[in-house]
Image (cartoon, rainbow over all chains, first blue to last red; front, side):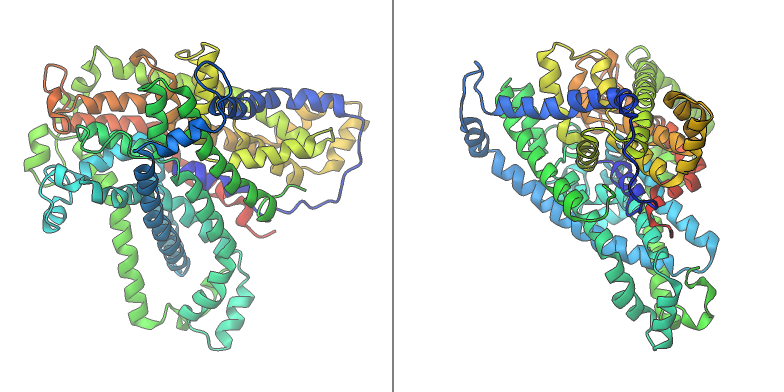
Length: 310
Length: 299
């Protein structure tokens, strides 16, 4: 769930291919050579693992057909529903924060006239994206420990005087949402900023002549034009958020298991594979997560119109 | 080109509106900046200084040196091994990614072959799913093949980088004039020469961009090596951080002992774990942002 991965992807969004269709050439032998290695990697690390997980999820440990038994087992696991709840709660907080704050910040930064200030702010918002994965979680462990934290005063003001008090289970979705927002928001702000630049100056000027103030321009022109980017951000973040793993995993380790090691769905799948040696159960959970991700992505690719598939 | 050209009158809702926007921006600047500044300062302090002194007072070089020595003495220099592993995995994956994805993107953009559209749509769909979604399935696959623990078990999956193929595809299908390639063919270039001598030199910016994204993604990858590499000797630094964390008494009281890690040392490890990426981010911001918003610019 690193910021860069998510934010890098729209790099090529919405490009239109200039020319029309090309002549069908007799150059296909060479083409197969060019795509051979990539196709092999796609098969080996995209298609085969997905099919193998499907196979494992439908069989038992001895390889016999098990129907949906693995799925009923993992869904019935006493840890499954709580994990779904944790991830869902985290997602709600994170998605709301992303949609509201990223849009507001992008519009605010876009309204700044001073070039150096605007680009400086974008760099500042974007820089935490370099700290992905374990590094950003570790940094936030420091920040959340009132004894060492630079905002220890703020934490104590909120009535939190020790690390253990900070990371009580009820706070975790908020904490994970803050960490994810801190690392990921900047990349999206840069993208929204780019999209705002795309709105023609004439449209804005016309609205202004008609008497629209900056707030009305933001609400009636900029926001509607950002809509597809916002939905893209929401869908990608939803897919990434369901995968929650490294944040609770490290926090569990740092807290002496006050945070359970089966807090999220991916952690539960990991527990199945590595603690219980139940690869079929692990496959069932990862398949559920994979299907969610694939469905979100496929809907977006085939219906969203943001990507060029000629 | 933007609102910048119009008059002052059109500020953000006059004086009070501008103040509110300014305050909101300032709060978020602090939110994004404080953690990084504090982290850098923390590496220059002693364990006691970190807690008793002002959080934003810089420490000293001697404390930085002491933290450095403690960090690299941890488990007989494990940190050096982890950083070297990270470099091996990230660079190895980068090389294979380039060899695989640049020709593939070229072929998909400029040639015709069966299943081209299928491959393109598959590329898009996989590119948009979070890369963690395939980690456990790939683990189950490689486990059956007995490949767990080998460097290839992380390098090869990292080399499957559909985003790189898509970036290359977009670049070749929009930025390379077809006539140029046709002219090279008339001059007697073979198909491979057209690619290697004409298209590839023109694609230098996109090669650099794919290389950058691939490197950053591999370097920062946690879940894949965490699952694939059971032995500490094989950890990249991102996973090695968990070992350091487990040995930090401040977070894990049961770990107090000869190998215990102090908080500033852990902070230094965090900085070192992101340093290559942070440096690239800082010095190639323009380039990066240009790449990320390539689709957002006007045609």
